[in-house]
Amino acid sequence: MTDQTKHQTTAQADQATSNIWGGRFSEATDHFVAQFTASVNFDKRMASQDIAGSIAHATMLGQCGIITKDESRQIIDGLTQIKGEIERGEFVWQVALEDVHMNIESRLTALIGDVGKKLHTGRSRNDQVATDIRLYLRDETKKIVSLIAKLQSGLLDLASRHTHTIMPGFTHLQTAQPISFAHHVMAWFEMLVRDGERFVETRRRINQMPLGSAALAGTTYPIDRTITARLLGFDGICQNSLDAVSDRDFAIEFVSNASILMMHLSRISEELILWMSAQFAFINIPDRFCTGSSIMPQKKNPDVPELVRGKTARVFGQLTTLLTLMKNQPLAYNKDNQEDKEPLFDCVDTLTGSLIAFADMLPNITPNAKNMKDATMKGYATATDLADYLVKKGLPFRDAHEVVGSAVGLAVQKDVDLSELSLDELQSFSDLIADDVFDCLTLEGSLNARNHIGGTAPSQVEQAIERGRERIVKV
Image 1 (tube, rainbow, N blue to C red):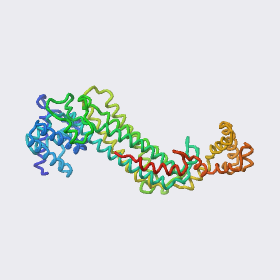
Image 2 (image 1 turned 90 degrees about the vertical axis):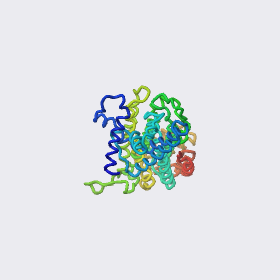
Image 3 (image 1 turned 30 degrees about the horizontal axis):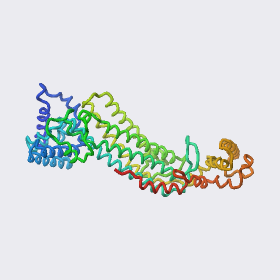
Image 4 (image 1 turned 60 degrees about the vertical axis):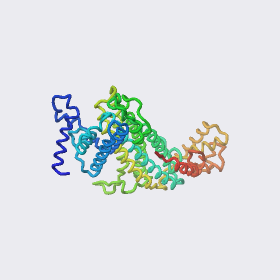
């Protein structure tokens, strides 16, 4: 675009600004106020959705005879040209035009003349922006669901390699019972199943069309909203014009889903950070996801998990922002709603980046099987198995619990595992104990004994992995 063209575009922008509502006002908007109230620097992100909505609207106006077919064609051709200019980086955005909508409409009028001014017939920026946000979130939700699916698939691959890799299961961060690394990874998978389902369900509520509600009360023109909805791929049409232009529930729900998903990623991050420490040494994270220290040459820091853990707070903050933004707004649209986009966009960017990093990193972590197994041996992880053994011999569970507690006390005193106590020592606590007790005191025996859906037995985990292939989230 030449300097002369840019100058003309700026001049047109200034003129267009005064024409939006200039008839009512006796003086121009203060320069600072114009800058303060402008949103184009961030809402231009929705340019493709805005143009798609405008093309559908112009098509509907033409089909309903509100404008001529030729005028509709001119508008669509002009919008298509503008889309190309934006994609090529040639479009000149004007803060003076306030937002993405007026920037595009002003350029359209510059291209095709007064016909461009007919595009806004039967609509308002209120229903226009509500439509743009829904189209934008619909697109982004599909991308996020695909990233969740990619991460789920990677976790299933990781789990399939480690159904017999034993590690301690924790409660209160204390060794509780033996599990497999695959079983733990599948717990992460289950979190993501719920996350994916939430986004798919929310997408259905996002995909309702506000366009046609105009400012708040609908329009007097003989529009057909079903045409526009069909062209834009909406599942349905918002049924109340007041609600349609002022509703941001769908955005809040999206960020709420994102907050829960980020909470899950943060919990996973916390475990990765602990496990990578020298005190655990359970896993290795590939170097490309870590950094070193500027002063300590031995350091390998798990920066990606740490940063995702930190970014979780950022998404929580965006949810609080949107809830607070909406809590005291009377119907219908208010300028407050301009503040919905930046937290929403930031949430999308943060969540997308976190999922991309995790989808690459998690499937490539390497467990240290020896350290995991050694740690499991240190925490008397088979104590519950010994109690279950006694119950099966006829001892009430509470009595069995007391017997095993005494046996653990002796093992602690001798600094050995339960499986390392002699038969005579174990029988000193209960004459129900026989030499078959050692079958249940092995880590492998403990895993295999829990042979039911959801249990730790390798065969059950393998089946869960196979079922998981069919449960990967889909839009």
